[in-house]
Structure formats: structure tokens, C-alpha cells
Length: 234
Image (cartoon, rainbow, N blue to C red; front, side, top):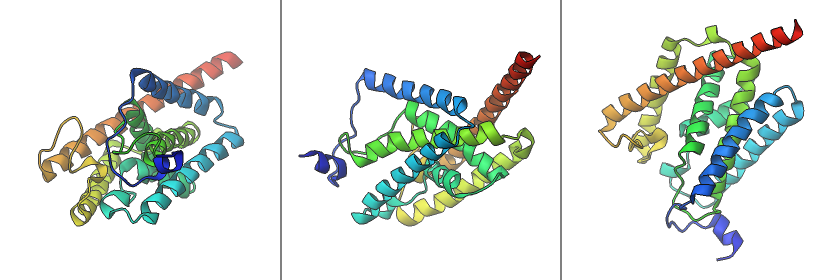
């Protein structure tokens, strides 16, 4: 199988089994994205680079999905991180909804790179590369938004809860229609399958908790950086 076939094959096999140094590389890439996104948060060139990287990743991935007429159970953008990718790219301005998806994208991309769940294709398949590149770009876009626009008062626990449970209800309906596992609502990782209703409650509750925690971490970080900048200027 040549490189082109490895990249774009539709023959399902097994997810790649990365060795330890690959995971160290993913964690290093994760840390580097945090650092660079804060260091160059005001640089338009970096912002454009991340946006273009995300756009190309999504175009290539969905061209492969739809060009090969992959089943709707796999080829719709209803994973949480995929939704966040499109929101961060396409929704202009600032709002509580965009802040929500920036927080979701920050946690989701971090979790995905720390505990990757790849599609059953060999490396370097387009889905594997898309998984890595897409989550790095999502993390960059989400962090850039939060570093520049985060407002603690914009999104409270009630907002996070309502948005999360509503979003997951929509994703759950999509799963029922197409037989998918979008949002891991059908077969949640780590905790296992406990039935659709229990899965919905568990996944939604975990997301509410992690998004709220991510918001608090971002708030504390930005406060500390602001205080440090004031001290340096004094």
C-alpha cells in the first residue's frame, strides 16, 4: 500500500497502536499549543495560521467522508469538538455561546490529545492526522478567544447546564436517527454503556463539571497574569 492509499483508504482495520514516545509527543504538542497561543495571542499572523489550519483540516476530512459516501453514523459533524471547531471558525464576535464552545473546545481538545481515541485505520490515515491536527487547531482557536475575550460574568452554571443538556439532547436525537455514537452518548468511554438515558445524564453532567472547571482555571490564570503585568509596570 503506497502513501496515497494509506492516507485515503476506506478499508477498516484497527486503530494505530502508538508507542510511549508518541504519547509524549502528543503531550508536548499540547503544552506547546498552550504556550504559543498565549505568547502570540495578539499576533494576527498566528490567528490566521490557526484558522487556516483548522479550515483545511475540516475541508480535507469531510471531502474524504462525503467523497467516499461514508455512512451518516460517522460523517456528520456532531461530535462535541467538531461542533466547537465550526463555531470557533464561523461564528463572529463574542457571546456566551461562543465562550461556551471555546471552553468546551479547550477541555475537549486537551482530553482528546491526552487520551486519544483514533478511528480504525492505519497511521498516517487522513482520520488520524485530522484528529491530531484538528484538535491542536481547535485548542489554539479556543485559547485565542478566551485569552482575548473571556468574561466570567457572561456564562454562569445555569447557562452551562442548559446549553449542555440541550446540545446533548439534539445529539442524542441524531444518534437515534442515524445509529451513530456522536458525543459518545451511545458508548461513553471509561464509564461504559449504561443505557441511553443514563449515558445522556452522565455525559452531560461530566461536561457541565469540566466546562465549569475549565472556566475557573481560565479565570484564575488571566487574573494572575493581569496582576503580574501590573506589578511589572509598577
